[in-house]
Length: 231
Image (cartoon, rainbow, N blue to C red; front, top):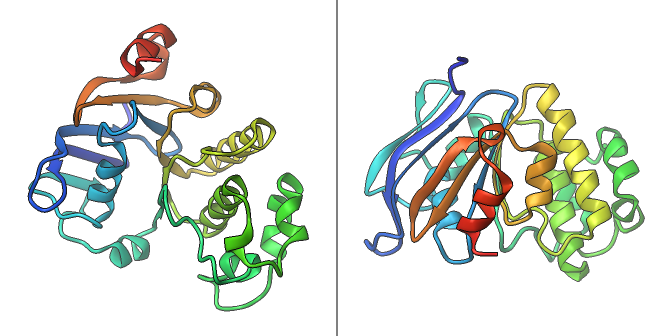
């Protein structure tokens, strides 16, 4: 078995000293996708905030390429090759679409974005438009493209398909598959099982802040997942 490139063990924490996520563990190998699933309010987004350093762990360990990440701030995570796309405030609304896309690059060259524009022409059409005036689904697409175009090794995405039309979800899946082939690794919080079917490798299902299922996707049935999601 290949050693995981990213792992977390016994992660526990929450807000203001309260525990929202309790003893959660998981891992993912390079070039694969770990899906974190669960009903609303079970701690999925809190888990990502704990893993990326937005919230302080009460206990637990987090490792990326054998590096200990506990105590590192979000800006340090970025310098280590990790990107995080939150569920809320996914773009800088006062900046244009173009400015959002080039924010981390230091120049206005967008030739590296041409392939993304083929999938999402709406972005190319609205480069000068303020990102805050886009629809919710369009903002999600913008955030997703910005994250992928940064070229980092590990991408942590919180509900990337929320509000996105099915046609564009399929484009998102295709781009994730392409990045997987180049060695990129993903941790994705989602409720869209179609995206799981398209690109998932590992499944972690949460309820009430704890792990209910942790399995390779090919070793668990969709029915078992749905039963725990309560849908």
